[in-house]
Image: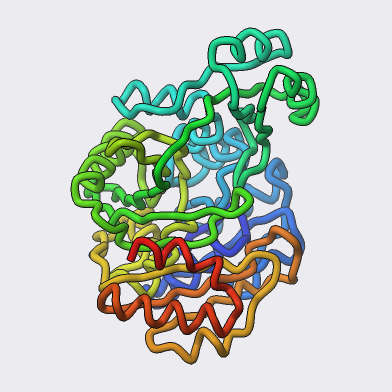
Length: 374
């Protein structure tokens, strides 16, 4: 029986452990919190990311280490790689932690992005803002997710406030990009180089946090093929093993790179019930060197994120092919505490189920963008 070690004990680690259990896989989670939600379903080693005495014990107890959180220090991953197998590899993790390195990779591999420039000082910001213009967004190069580490600039009057708000951290300035929609592709690559992708997903965000995903994205055949090519190029270049998400903008029928997430991803949660083999099971398969599972969709799926607190589960579970996920977290503003996935055979069936459920929950605004494209 194999044991997978997971760095990070949030809901992604929790769902990885739940997906791996039917395969006979054991798990050990390491997190610097005393009560992360993954500890409700897998053993926990409570330790700091730089507690190498504890991490040595961790490494000796597992067959492979992986991540549920991309901000685990890259030097911790490199240290672990000297003691056990680490998938994805530490170089891939380090690149995805740095927005400048990430976007430079996109360009090198032929994936366009919104205009950007590095910023290392207020003087840099003042200079590059003149060429990129307004509106634009200042983003820290590191430690940014779910809209964190960002400041929108509307005019030159915002420059000093933005620089101070981000604490003078190394950053990039990006042009404001009027995209038409946001999509993502979830991809998986095995130890043997086998590669597969899930159907392209369309996403909607609220306050920088994913709110709703629709899979497969509508009218996406050509875009999907382009997204798959970009994802494969990235996976091969990084010698990546495991699941990752490539977040993309669409404008005028063309894809632009936004972010790379080196882990299972929120926009792939629908795959638990909506695909033949979920992203979580496929990640476990990949890092253990097992054959990859089928990534095909089983009809349509809509995933709704629950942020801050859970709604009434009964209104969801009363719908056919509705699935409820409570992460076991206490309520808190801006916190992902659960999700639901609604599955259907076709768009008409999905519209009926979503409309009824949203009315019962008082969440018409959350599902409105999905209903508009179905």
